[in-house]
Image (cartoon, rainbow, N blue to C red; front, side):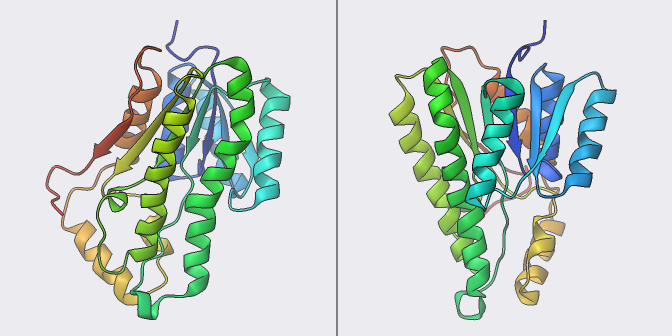
Length: 248
């Protein structure tokens, strides 16, 4: 018997990077994974890969920066599987730029996806978790949720917000049988840098990241699996992981 047999795990941002690796990792542990993201073709490829490895998964196309799509994602998951045992709030973007040169629409996108989307999806799954008296919510933050770098102001705003929201959530749900974990990775080899629209910021962060051996998405997925497979008596409040050769 696998450690997550019978569990339903909803993973956002599952079409690449940490989300994709987490979906595969939780499926390996026996969970039925609902993979959510905007890119339907990539989601289908992920589901097929999980099935080929003997796991269970299905896909729901959704943009978790859009409230109506968040509600539809939860309804679809409950209609298909009847419950949500694990929520991994992973979807996010990192749009770096100095404050003076930044595009306000980039700020809005980060706040809507990294923070408000995470909060609303959490809000949407809580009634079911309260009713079943169990659940585990894992929120992806960042090292940028602990320290701020030039050019990363609003990205850090969202990640500091994730940390605060997660700690409040943990304290509010501690008597309800719900566990809450925040994961704070340092540099990870994902597509995040590709989304940066400011050329100078993109060049700077690329230089920094290329000078170290970055974490791999699977490293973060392993941390998430460690948290959600801990005995029910154990809540892993927080995991900070960074590359061995990185200091900031």
